[in-house]
Image (cartoon, rainbow, N blue to C red):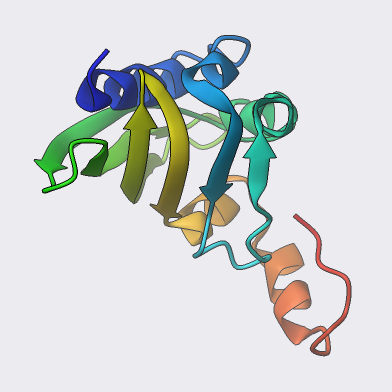
Length: 151
């Protein structure tokens, strides 16, 4: 698969809640980071770590919202392994029917059809709001620096 095909399979797989298949899009040893996560970036360095990530975080979000990727724009770079993908996850908050939109930019390195590196820039605050966790997040923000972080 081309890097763009792998990316599209990833974002469509997330929307389809295909959490068992998603880790197979990644190399055994990988480097996935979420630099904009307000709870801290916790690198995912193996396929097993991604399996756990999708198994825990996937249902946490998908039990609250339904969405599809939209407005996909894939930019090729001078490195044939690297693409930059801009898109939005767009849908509905299930409990309220409110519209849901999370803008995203992924910078992916894909080698031999597998993701070996990814930087996922996601509007995490939109997810916090959709899950009804604003008060918990505000409490986190008020914690002294160096206090243990929730995720």
